Image (cartoon, rainbow, N blue to C red; front, top):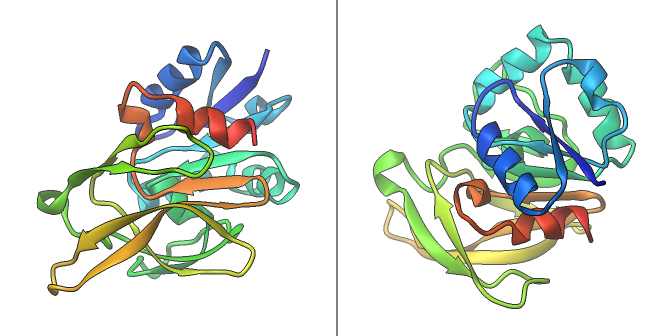
Length: 197
């Protein structure tokens, strides 16, 4: 049985647990360091990245999760999870930190505020058919390191009028991250891709 932990302090952790159940795997709601033991993968969910960072420190999970990520535990980070994995965060609070495990720079709310939320059908490398992606106050990836693979991009017209393709799914080593919320669909293929690569 594949055991996937979902950090369950804030955000869309229940929706991720539902995705894990759809795949027939065991989902673990991770709320304390001891629950990291024996996992085959870990999900950093969407939500509010600064709040999650504060809660990770308050629950003494920042250091053990960072150690697991840097030791190669497969990880899926979605929306806020992408921000927490990124090498650099643009537009974050002065006290905001990240695990610096994924060589990308990310702009918080890079696609705009709630009113600029949108959906798109993405062609994701490794999936046979397109998947519907929901972007809600989504972070935008502004830089991608040499070892990072872009698995999907999305075309977007930004508030300044410019239109360009932006990475929406990226991977580096054992990490997969998305700027959107795959957990709120009924499609678990991205979760499967993240942990069966």
